[in-house]
Length: 229
Image (cartoon, rainbow, N blue to C red; front, side):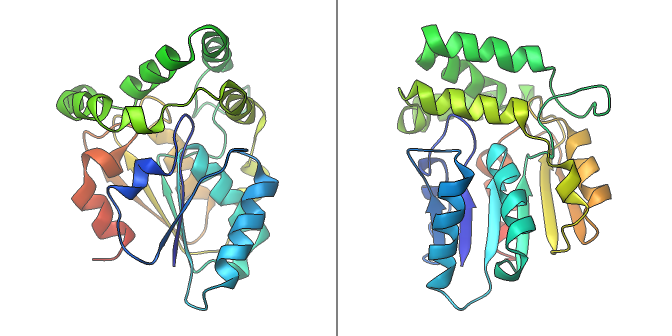
């Protein structure tokens, strides 16, 4: 069974029209990114299936997936991290992220213009060479994932500001495949390289020219990696 966890300002709809295999569980929750709720759902979902479980997390969802992998390694056969990181923001000891002020400014924008803030964030997910993909996403997918639940959005941004998973990452000993766009401006490629160098059973696939959402812009490549096609 594949257990998918979406990213910030998104819902399970971001996956469902791309990955329609019957053995996929697309996590969604009104309390996202509550780890307590996620872990409860993950345990319930994996209890129902005896087959090996493959955990797929995108962006913030990848950070949550890392927490699950640390807490429940016996439940996970393989971990797939897409455009993710161990720490979203930079500090004196970590440079593979965004400056905290960028996230704080986004949080301020969410309070006054939540829809515009989300749409601007979606535009950042695409590299310069993916302009046509961005236009398609905004015209079709964006309206199915944008939310008026500002508390949920703010909670997600606070998670990104506060969470540092570096102490956990070196203790993860699960086969891990990291997928990252070479031109990701939200989670820089250096974040993926840090994960690859720290997780002992990890492999990095760099999608050339891709931004933050390679499973949308390079669907066939990512499906081949995820489903071992």
